[in-house]
Image (cartoon, rainbow, N blue to C red; front, side, top):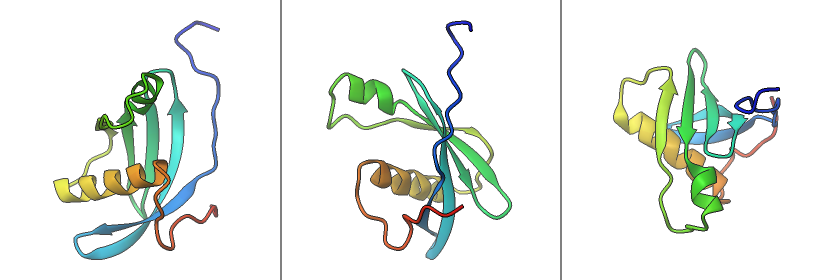
Amino acid sequence: MPIHEYPKYEPKPFFLNVKIEGRSRRLKFQQILKGIGEEHYQVTARNKTLVFSTNKPIVERRGLKEFPWSWKLIKGELNSKSAQDAIIESLENHLKGKPNPGGNLYRA
């Protein structure tokens, strides 16, 4: 196996409630890549799939607890910046262990 390939990684999907434009929406999240330098998360709604990339592993490996993670939309398209910010905020809160009311159910 070449060095640049990651082993197959399939964690369980999880659901989070995200408030977008005043309405609460239940979205399915799944981590699809976990590497040394970045992680990818797939977000699925009814008719749309998005993939976000973050530098979380680098920040945590260097011990920078208060340093903000950077996020980038690498696949898919959103019409509003506020929707993207709401999705990222909800995912980040979940990864930091903060509660998401009614959303942390491990059902597929």
